[in-house]
Length: 157
Image (tube, rainbow, N blue to C red; front, side, top):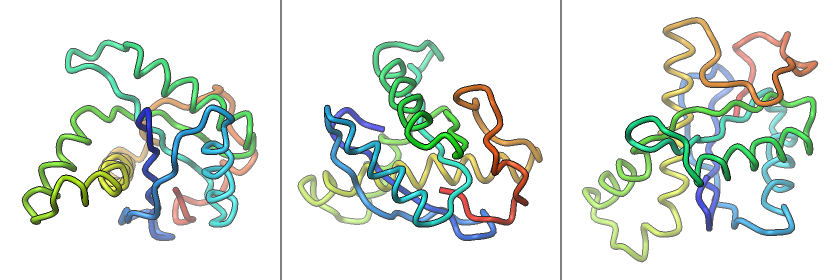
């Protein structure tokens, strides 16, 4: 989650592969949060992964606090949806690097880099869950949502 845009990625129903979906513009009226909540509802998502931008030393600074606030607001907007914070260190850098290597110019990258970073964050969470058998990251709100009993094979966002 950036300060200007929010990249949105989704996984296949089996939770194996993350793909880009869209970029939402951040908004002070929380319409970006509403948009993500609606996208999750349209896809019957059981979980939303929100990138937590920790500093390289693992400390939480202003950007991480903003991401936590955004994740909490999403949880309030969609209380039946699990919202998890997952370390996103270096994902935007990696996304820029991959897109630059593919030949996209700076202007072309600007609109899709957040989607690519969202794909990297979601894919890392899916992979970690598959390896460990545990949900990745930190659950926002601490309570299990009512849909948490669904099998892992169901759709995630």
